[in-house]
Every structure is written in structure tokens, then in C-alpha cells.
Image (spheres, rainbow, N blue to C red):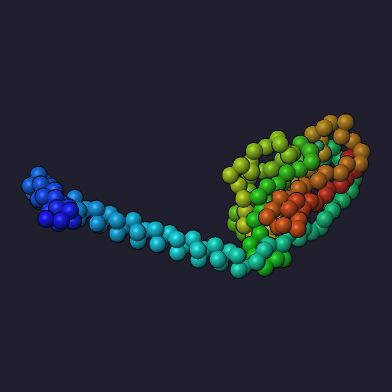
Length: 191
Ligand SMILES: [Cu+2]
């Protein structure tokens, strides 16, 4: 008897042994074959999805950010008056999706939220002072527009904040040419 024949005979024995133990159960070999088929088919499916998914993204092109206006002058604002609010437009003028990954402002008195369709972001503040962006990002489709709602609290700094002020709002995205776009808000704060 060759070594190969011996091998098959031993497998046969193992199978029979398995059947005797479990009776109505499947043999070890059947389970292993089914498991192997399952794993192979699963791998093919996942690979196909990844290849086609990535291919699509690559073909679609890149997003390009356009902010408008770049600067807004709120004019003379009274410390006792209502908070200064201004909405800036954040448009994707590129061929592919634009992903906004973070928003921050230059000072504690200035906060911003991004609204895209019916989605509104958390409130962003001064860089490093909030962690609102940790799990946040927002897609803007080609041709689509988001609204950056900025609030400036002209009374936050008290009398130290009187006079001409300039505040910046930074918008980080996956636009390779403009990874950090910015808009500015100016005003003259009076008592
Ligand atoms: Cu401030």
C-alpha cells in the first residue's frame, strides 16, 4: 500500500469515527469544505467591493472649495446689542466630492456651524479649544453648497474687546490646493 492510499484510508477512519460520535451531525470534512467555500466566496466579494469602490472614487475627480464672501464687515456693533451673525457660503466647484474635515476660529468669542442640506455640524470654536471635530466630517457633493453660520460675541471680552476687530474662521478639507480655506469677519465694537 502506498503512502497516499494509507492517507485516504486514515481520513476515512477519522470520518467514520466522527460520524459514530455525533451520529446525526456532519462529518468534520464536510464542515471544513463548507467553511472553506464560505471564506473563499467572502474574500472574493470583499475584494470586488473594495476594487470597484476605490475605482469609482478615483475616477470621480477632486472637490474644490470656494468660500463667499471671503470677508464680511459687520460695521459698528454695540457691546450691549444682539450677537453678530453672518452666513458664509461654502461651495464645492470641483468635479468630485469635497470632504470638510475640521472648522476652527481665531478667538473664543467666535463660533461656527456648517449646514449642508438638513445636516448641521457641532459648534466649532477656537482652534484647540474644542474637540467637536474628533468624529466629524461633512461631504459636499460637486455643485452643492454649505452654509457656514458664524456667531461673534462682541461682549465676551468686555471693554478689552472694544475697537476694531478681525476674526478668522478656518475650514479644513481634502481640497489638495486649499486644505485650509478661511473667511474673515470684521467690526468696530463700541460700548
Ligand atoms: Cu475673541
